[in-house]
Amino acid sequence: MADLSAPVGTDPTLPELLRTHPQLSMTPTSGLTFEGVALNAIADAVGTPCWVMGAGTFKRRLRRMDQAMREAGLDVSLHYAVKANDHLAVLSLVGREGHGADIVSGGELARTQKAGIPAGRVVFSGVGKTDAELEQAIGLDIGQINVESAEELDIISAIASRLGRTARVTLRVNPDVDAKTHAKITTGLAANKFGIPFDDAAALYARAASLPGIEARGFATHIGSQILSTGPYRAAYARVAELVRSVRASGQTVSHVDCGGGLGIAYRAEAEGQPEALAASIRAELGDLGVKLAIEPGRWLAGPSGVLLSTVILRKEYGMQTPFVVTDAAMNDLLRPSMYDAWHGIVPLAPHSPGQPCAPTHVVGPVCESGDSFARDRDLPPLPRGARIAILDAGAYGAVMSSTYNSRPLAAEVLVEDGEWTVIRRRQAMEELWQDETVPAFTGGTM
Ligand SMILES: Cc1ncc(COP(=O)(O)O)c(C=O)c1O
Ligand SMILES: N[C@@H](CCCC[NH3+])C(=O)O
View 1 (cartoon, rainbow, N blue to C red):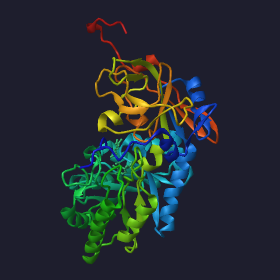
View 2 (cartoon, helix red, strand yellow):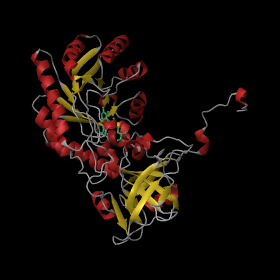
View 3 (cartoon, protein in one colour):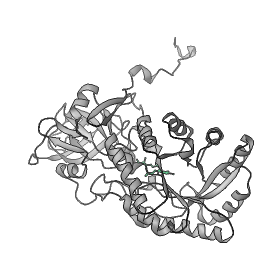
View 4 (spheres, rainbow, N blue to C red):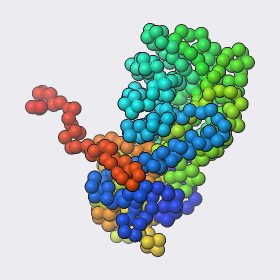
């Protein structure tokens, strides 16, 4: 199983990171800019830690993904995976571009509605949808529910019947295919909790067609996240195609196939997943089935569209040992390095020349966990107290996975668009950390 911490060739140098991230550039006067806006100006005004999302990058990637599918001649609807970055501003962009959403909870569904994405363009995945969430979804007549178990199919049938509705469903099949990604984000192996075992899917589909309140319209699959090669996609889609053909042969109708998400990005020195290659895989395996297709990309759209800004609190030097640079961002802000040993590019905001010496540095947060680390032995220019850095590719599974661990308020969020920037989430105030808490009298409280 691939490990996100595994070295991928040689680590990219700072100039290489800038080359692979055209949304960034280094200017001699303003330092690092993101979509043409000086990140120092944002940090001066808003403070750090601060997430910066680029609307231009996000839209460009959305359009490229959409175009890749259309140019492959595929009839595909795009459902952005809300879990990657659920900010209302991001969802509004998705809606405005005419796309839909893939959701995994009632909260995400409510966000899509708040952001103006029509319910008919929403697909609902997830292994454990509560009755209340299903009532909310069926009540809104959402586009599609991806059913993940036989048990769930019965629950949906009962709820839809009670509400006098018909739920359009696809069965999410677990194809038992290794996505060759990190163990914690692979979803298409038989040992994973996701989807219906491949061998049970045909019989369950026949049953779905006979249940009240259910319109069985096809199959879905999603084998994992940060997938960088087409082999696993081809293998999964081939299995789904086999299923479609076999259930059709037994006289049933199949009109939809949902191809899931998972396309990976270049955090380190990997070659980024290519939407055109994904489209070619879909076309090769599913293109002749005459079904309406769907995709659910998240990370590929949002990841490179965001950075996390942070300031060095202090440098901790121990004689000859590698110095620790302690930043004001921590694992409570960006969890991925702690949780998956994920590698994120780190670029100082101050101008630096290509010839400037770099030295191995540990970049860590101030949270009381040894795992609160962003980088070990990273070759970086000197980062004195007060220096600022941008942590790259933080637009997906970044702010959404933040917590207030160690009573650290949630960081501010900024959106850059057309050379302008706006705060899209103010920094959480200290008092908001405890505003929903009560202290009962027996504990000695007076609140
Ligand atoms: C059902 C489903 N669809 C789509 C996604 C989006 O994945 P990614 O952000 O890797 O594209 C996920 C997350 O893995 C998922 O579970
Ligand atoms: N949170 C994971 C991705 C999870 C994908 C959802 N199934 C990450 O940051 O890589």
